[in-house]
Amino acid sequence: MTYQEIKENEEINTYIRQADATLSALGFTEHSFAHVTLVAEKTGYILSSLGYPPRTVELAKIAAYLHDIGNLVNRVAHSQSGAIMAFRILDHLGFPAEEIGQIVAAIGNHDEGTGVPVSPLAAALILADKSDVRRNRVRNQDESAFDIHDRVNYSVKKAELKINGAHTIIKLKLSVDTRYGSVMDYFEIFLQRMILCRKAAEKLGLEFKLMINEQQLI
Image 1: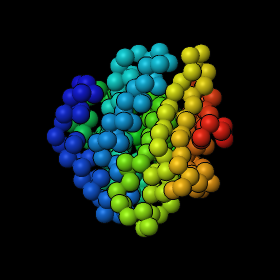
Image 2: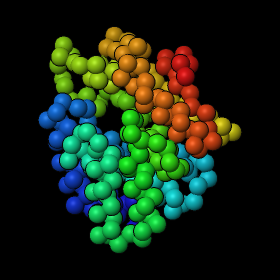
Image 3: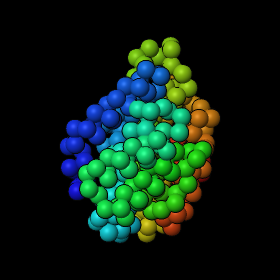
Image 4: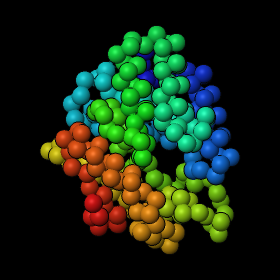
């Protein structure tokens, strides 16, 4: 079964919509189709750029598309509950055990705090997920009521995740409008994510670098 078929599966898309609705009720930024599709494409870009087999790239994109469905259950430990949900869905769809295992392990390890880049799929998913910082993820339209997550996401005018030609460095470049959020705001909420990204890059044989407004910070 392909990534495209997973994207067109209405049962899966219902869970994604409902998970995002739960996060919306809790005041979180957007975690719906824009997020999971962007993360899937970035995950695929990372592994295809590094020469991984096409089926491995396909499985990584499927893991990325499914990675946040656990938010339907609860935001706490959503990576683990999402992995369990994904297991049931993929088993029902007839995926072989070997592929289910790879996808479930990536989903279950994508979040900071509990996640570890246990495989190339998990590492690529971590890097793709944690690099999705952008203004249009903010739901709150009242700037005066922004919390720190709103400020940081709203401040990012552009985010690029690129692997260099020598395949030695993966760089996250952010263009930040400091009228809305400072560089220190970014590190206050994302430091653990950046540490996890560094570990994920190392799993892939890469060095992680973070650039904000043309200044290298990691």
